[in-house]
Image (tube, rainbow over all chains, first blue to last red):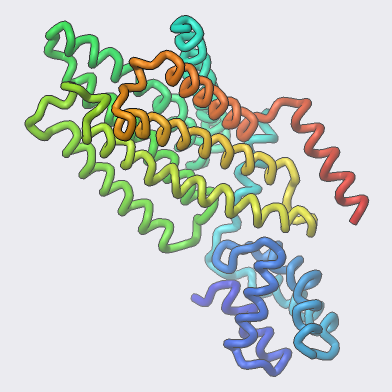
Length: 101
Length: 250
């Protein structure tokens, strides 16, 4: 099964007209700016990144209506959550510890 | 000075065991692997120097059980390293295939190292402090330590960026930083000991000043772990207040 990153990159390529390779590069850059790992990113974090960081990445590459494209993409992420991907992150581990301190 | 060294050594050990036991109690509630692995790593792992000291004493007095205690010390120390590696994989890279492979490769390496250290015909406790086997032993431990340090510093950098987006609790980011610093100080102790033993040619146990420095650093590392896993209220409040001020400013 395709990963969350693969699925969002394919959707981004479709929405912007970029090749999938370029779309993956843009998405990777957005994830890096947001401090997220392409393999470990959770759907919730991906959604925030797409809504808040990706518009700037797309605008800087001359994409018109970047905020609108990103909003539509962020809304679609909810439907991509069927991926067999753990939602664990370092934050969860520390949250578990801090809740019990 | 030896009394200060002894107290510092015991304090560092006790703190590590206390953190480990507390992590195990958390693991009992959460049923999650990372806290269980780290709990075992810290509570059992901290005791390996005691087994080593006992083994050396028994060896000096000609008691036969020294080899068993020595083997046990190596097993506990390496099991603690494996626990740390398991936590690294499960906390920072649960879905990354290479992290899983790296974990198993390093485990295999430690098994091979422990066989060489324990079972080669030369008596392992003869001149242990200055021996190549000790170097091999610490190299084995350093593999997981270096990986852990890399993951902690890398994730701290990423979590700082997530904090700006409101995707991460500033306290969690600070906890990862404390963990990284504690691991760095721990590795520094190992490097310092190895330098003294193998470059200067002086066993650390024969230099009270070096022992004081090493045990002091070990205590600092234990305190770093305490701040990482169970930050005290004053520290927690300070970090959260800083995070709040940063959020208001941006």
